[in-house]
Amino acid sequence: MTDISREYATALFSLGLEEGKAREYFDALTIACKAFEENPEYIDFLHSPGIPISERTAALEAAFSEHIPENVLSFLQLLCENGHVRSFFECFTEYKKLLDESERVSFAKVASAFPLDDTEKANIKHKLEKISGRSVTLECTVDEKLLGGVAVEMDGKIMDGSIRHRLSEVKDVISR
Image 1 (cartoon, rainbow, N blue to C red):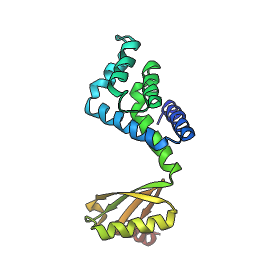
Image 2 (cartoon, rainbow, N blue to C red):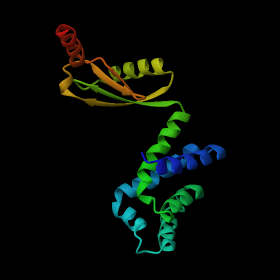
Image 3 (tube, one colour):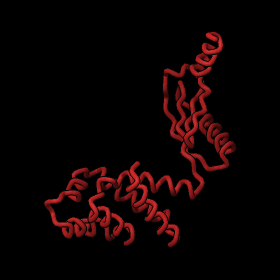
Image 4 (cartoon, rainbow, N blue to C red):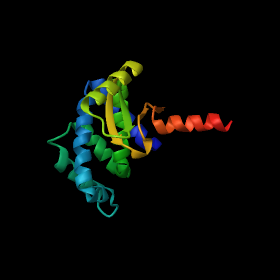
């Protein structure tokens, strides 16, 4: 994450908080993100020095003015004018982090040896919410290397309850 992306995202987020529209701004950024992902050449167009800035910002207005708030449109235009439109996805990611933090939401990556059923996912989510005191969103994946158990990464911490990890700990103890 670049400092520039963080600064832009923080500025927009602060404005969103001030206006009580932080979630609305995120929804608008999501619309722009989907448009840019579906049309990657659009970012190239917006970054092209061979096209006058006025044409590029007018293209943004034509594409988004009816779908997103004016301040979010101005944000996109400012990125374009200052030559930072290629940092949009980093800005989006940083804005999401700021919003999640303000709404006390944590994101947890859960890896298990086998697919988890809905009950197991709900139990893990409940335990993580109890531990963190926050609402938790899970992303569950299967990692056959784990042998059994689960490994969780949340808020920069790793909680590894996998059999593979436990065997590694036993190996370390034995080798001492």
